[in-house]
Every structure is written in C-alpha cells, then in structure tokens.
Length: 302
Image (cartoon, rainbow, N blue to C red; front, side, top):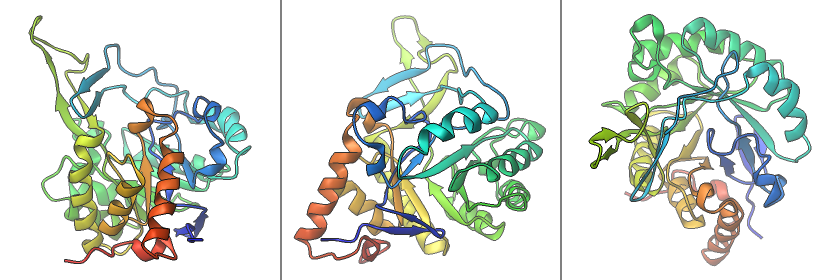
C-alpha cells in the first residue's frame, strides 16, 4: 500500500490533503458528513484580533466554473477560537492549521504570538489583507512589505509559519523569495484571484463589495502554474491550493511542486470531495507504482 504521509515543516500529516482556510469553517458542518480524522490537516477560518462580522450581503456570486466571494473574514475572533474551537478540533486525529490576518504589522505580530501559545500545529499567515498604514495596499503585493510583515511575525512564531501568497501580483516568484528571505517556514498558494460580476438588469455589481475573490475549477491552471514557478524559486515546503477537485488534480499539483495540498470550493458542492479525492489518489498511486506520495513533489518532467 502506498505511503501517503507527508512531513510538512516537521509536522507529520497522515496524507497530503488539508482544507483551505475560509471554506471549512471550523469543521462542525463537515464532521456530520465524514470523520475529520481522515484529513491530513484542517485549515480553519481566517482569524482576526477581535470578532468580525464580514461584509454585508450579497457576498457570494456564482461564476461558470467557481464562485466569487467577498465574505470579509467573518470570524469569532482569535480568543473565542482558542477557547471554543480548538477543543472541538482536538477530538480528531489531524493537524490544525490556524490562519491569521491583520491590518498592521503590529496586529500580525500579536496574532502570531497569541496563536503560537495555543494548541495548534501550524500557523498560516494571510498577507492578502490591506495594510491600513500604506493606504490599503495588500501586504502581499510588494516584496518590501512582505519582508517587513513576515520577518516581524516570524520573531513571534513558536510554531512553523506558512505564508499564504496572493496571486494578484506581476511576479509571484519575487513575492515568494521575499517571504522565504524573511523567514517563512513554508508557503501556501494560491489565494483567490480578484474578479467581478455585474447584474445586467440593474446594471449594478452583484457583490456588495463590488469585487471579490475568484475560487474554484477556473483558477486551477493558474494555481498549477504559480506553484511550478515558486517551486523553482524557493526551497521551503509548499501547500498548493486553488480549484483542486479530484485525486488526479492532487497528483498534478504535487508534480508541479507542492508538498501538500488544500481543497476548498469543491466542498460547497460536494462535502465528501476530500474523502473521494483521497481514495482516487491512493488508486492512482497503486496503478502507477508510486510507493510514497513524497516521490511526486516537484517531479514534473520539462
């Protein structure tokens, strides 16, 4: 039988399948469909220093091959997550990946320091957030801002720090190198692509925030391309995500250079998708004589 285990920043995942932050909540709903212990890891909803209600509705819009969202990081705040959600998640034999966001360098420092002392396995830092001190430009769009926020957060981190990269940049490798140079233990990519829909009857944007993040099958080829480029540019582990639906998609993302993957939007339509993909991954590996999933990482032949 194929060995599905992955060593990700020193944390052993029983398989390479995790859930993408923002799509899985804290696991309660999905726990009614399958045993969450089947997952390699759970990426929880993005956390902020205090409770956040998010943007007003409508904040979801369908697209031909995915969805746009401008949910706005709705979450109960980091303190309630630590108090209420970690005990629930620890019922399951899987790694916990806490995702944190901030609007200033100081907020990121505080979030990383606090979550480091909690019972989580990995910290994922979302740097697609607006830097309020720089006029709202996202932290992850300029190498100098990436270095500043990652180096500051890394000094506070007691758990492996994953930096989540925004695809809304000219050169993803430039951003990846900046994050690695600043001390990132791993990178995750891609976050959502910026998109927009318009109601042609009212001539108004569908989303309350006008624009939102595109996720789902439409972004998969972009994600594969960016993971491939980043794998050639850095040496730290990569958590690949963006439109993954099947076991074959997982193989493709691993070949591009990911060490583990995250599934997200597909679960809105099919909550059992990770379980099905895990079975498909095992079947593909057996059929192709692949003994260990780690053999696939970055093994694309060009």
